[in-house]
Length: 111
Length: 113
Image 1: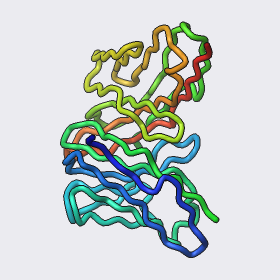
Image 2: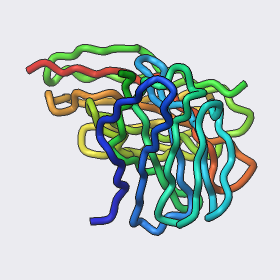
Image 3: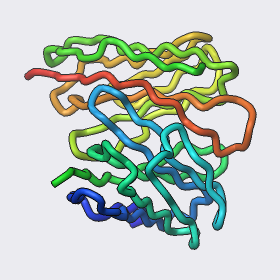
Image 4: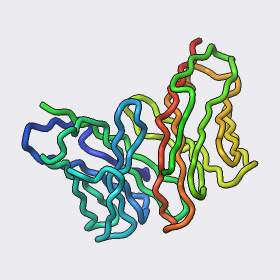
């Protein structure tokens, strides 16, 4: 089945640790996105990429980093500089002028 | 600054009791307005895209409409399985065709049997 796969489903981070969230899509979409969702605040854009080897900061990029080495993959690293990383992280992809489709998310918590 | 506001924050209905959810927006130019459904612990599921004022889209018990300042998601004779958070998002005109989306905070719908 075509879709977006996020892993792991749950992730725990220790103080000072970087963690990487995986996002893979087999929809052959050009664009990929990372959002953060906090209770009562809707989705906020962290980073997005419209083409391989290129990406742009979203509204809340501080403390996060991404790479786009392959069309199918857009991993997100939550660095130790992100002081409030506990949230539900959602990855999405889309084609030109088409709606974004989402994976089932990764829930990140602090140990 | 572009803003998207959804109301109410939460809505409790009895099965069969029709109602509407509101999404008001202030953007400099609208490329499209999107409705999504999100179940607990899951990613948003795409429902509708609306592009211009006066446009309407329907799917089963759901009907989305668009004016120049707001969109409504009408739910006719809802069932308990319609319980979810409904998210509204807008994409601005201009820029590339892979527009960034600005999301509202969502409306939590609960339908009681």
